[in-house]
Image (cartoon, rainbow over all chains, first blue to last red; front, side):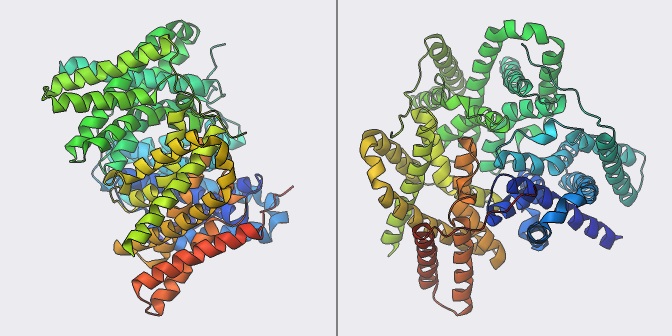
Length: 203
Length: 203
Length: 203
């Protein structure tokens, strides 16, 4: 079980890094710059979570995340022409990663003795701030706040986690149900173009 | 007295959040994205202060700040057509919030045993970095560095705080005088369009 | 020796601040805004390092860095017309500062008991994130990821540091060799326009 979750975690990191690297390449970043954007996309959310929790950022003690991001760069360079055909695969990985990142954000925050509502916020930050930092770095208005439902699926996952806890569901099942909820919500949002309404301006 | 200050603090949070939400709406953010920008504007400066002080960010232990920001979003959605007529009201709240944020930044930094000059810097960060992060998120050059006096009123407030302390003024009076100074300086700066000179480029 | 390194450190801070202030002036920032961008450029990388290490940011305990940045602002204001003729001088200072920042990032991270690979990453962050934050603040795509070799010279310096340690070279010599490597690599990269290849997009 642990191995399967670890595999999904790295697959999510890979997919997040790919999304950063591809967007950087559209802005003429060099290889190293694209790598930095990929890393920020993949580990940015968890890093903000760990800084807010006053914990040592997770990637500083485990090199796998930077290595997986380097593999993502290599992958984009070598298979450039085919990458676009793998969009659906990346999207599935990305959605799986999102679900797992949300779970890890909630779990770690509760471990630090903070209340459930803070944990839901931190799960959302873990899942969505990497993409927000990516878009800031490549000098775009953050996409995740304008298209389909993204960050809100993280909040939804948080409520499911809370309900499972209230119902005394075991921790493993709680986490699987939460991650699956985020994954499913994300797939449905993109398939049916479900969006949060745009906030209309004053004029 | 405490109740009055608490009220002003939430009014300031409300006004800061409104400014973020309104600017996000001009960029076609969805409701949730606008909410995030509102929250970042309202709590961003204090969060940077707390991270620099190695303290748990204030909003993680007290849900009121996120709730007030949610009310600000609701307010903009429901009263969209009238919001523009309330510009002066928001501006007053914003200036009151600025004064209180500066005081809270200075007070907390001194509590951590850091020197006065650091406290003045932290007061300025608490007051101005939320607006700076707002403008970065919506992909604009930070407004607070280009129009009327903003961040500099925070520095002025810091000096007033220092002088009051040197004169052995009681802490409550020191804080009220500081907040009032920032508020007054900000009102005067906007009324008379007092600006810091623009730094001319080389060509 | 210490005095010489301290001098270089402040010269590097001065050069980093100058680069931030000059780019801010091209965007019509006011004096105070330009100062903030200068400070962020000069101390931003080290601040991110210290936050990740859970340490009190270095400039909060030693006012010299903010004072040197203020002198940089004064310098740009007073000698505006001549600044452009000093480009080569600033560039040398900037490259010296880069080398010293990398060394300080590696040294401090090892002091915290973290592994060598983390230290290399932190040295790179210390050297390059100030410039990245500068470009984000002035609303540009980060220059350091698009032109000549910049961040990668920091990584190279990290490997040299590692090799020197493996060879049991004394700490002082290790640090001087590392800083000189970064400095030399940077000078050569700019002189011969050595760049990391641009990552080509998919279309």
